[in-house]
Length: 170
Ligand SMILES: Nc1ncnc2c1ncn2[C@@H]1O[C@H](COP(=O)(O)OP(=O)(O)O)[C@@H](O)[C@H]1O
Ligand SMILES: O=C(O)[C@H](O)[C@@H](O)[C@H](O)[C@H](O)COP(=O)(O)O
Image (cartoon, rainbow, N blue to C red; front, side, top):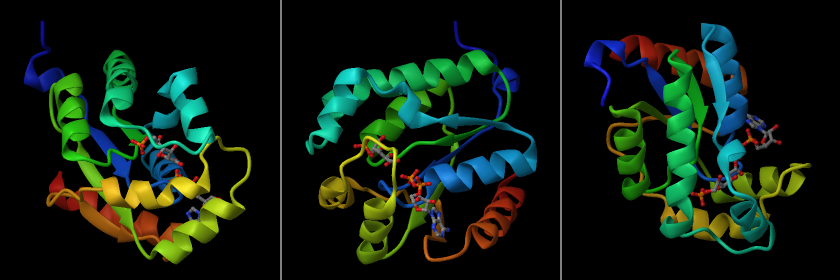
């Protein structure tokens, strides 16, 4: 049975393509607010991670169970959460809203492809193949309601903008 509206905890999703800085900003924002940080990538199946590591993009049929596992976990926490999740297209965001029982607030990290490529190529210890950036950008459907933050800014400045954006909507 769905929870009553007043029992739903606030959820903010930091979204964007791979390498845009979702995890970095989400961690900083969660630490600043004292909210729980949730890494969306932790909920991929081994098959999804292997597919991306092999340089093959996910499609929405691969994303369905991932989003279901992620939203179930968020609901079990029953506390305000900052989530790092690419949430690239409207279908995925529809599943997120259905899974949570409400639409979260979105902050979209976006910026130039060259900088994304540079950051992905330099990143270590992550399964994602930087060659998939083109397909990520092609899949991205930016939501009108998202607050946009430029990836070129230092994390501290992004944090300041994210706090201001959330204050304006709460
Ligand atoms: N604002 C920033 N300025 C400079 N480097 C950043 C910034 N945000 C993230 N990075 C670096 O870029 C890379 C990708 O960031 P990450 O948070 O893993 O992105 P995502 O979670 O979107 O894939 C990491 O090496 C990270 O340290
Ligand atoms: O942080 C990252 O590098 C990305 O988020 C990456 O891990 C991947 O893009 C998604 O988790 C998979 O799903 P999508 O193809 O839906 O972005």
